[in-house]
Length: 111
Length: 115
Image (cartoon, rainbow over all chains, first blue to last red; front, side):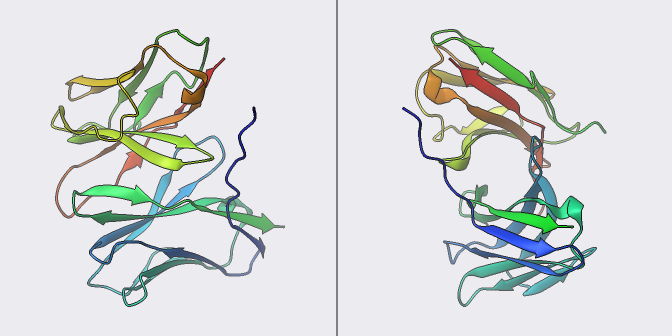
């Protein structure tokens, strides 16, 4: 029979507005975090990373915030564009040096 | 650099057939990873190599799956015999493999359909 797919959390945002994507990570010992963007039919693409000794890092139009107290990571996208429509994954490294990926968040940009 | 190159892009096969997926990592990268992506489970790590040596294959579902890395520029993931539940997108990724730089670079994936 047909399996039921996992419905990703979806954020719909108007073009030009700012987007905030949230991620709760699992392991308090994780010391490195990455945000990936995956467009339809493509592999995940690196966006930005942050280490646990930082709480904020900025890139071009993107900012990552890390709150270790509540094990929370967020990605802010400024002036969202249609090309930002994708699934966004957070990933963490803990222990054995392997990235563990979250389930992903779908971002839909409305023109 | 052309990035991580995977082939084929799409594979449709019948249950019981052998499937071989191929990957060429980025030149100079020492670590190579095979991931499987499905809607139900998301991205799952199957196996990873460092300097051509398998380091952790605990994610390999069962004995039907095997992976090799005969040299620094080539790896294969084989499924024999294939089953419908193996249908997924399989990604290969590579990284420098150095402490302090664990960024993975992914290929475009192989969409596998087992009928």
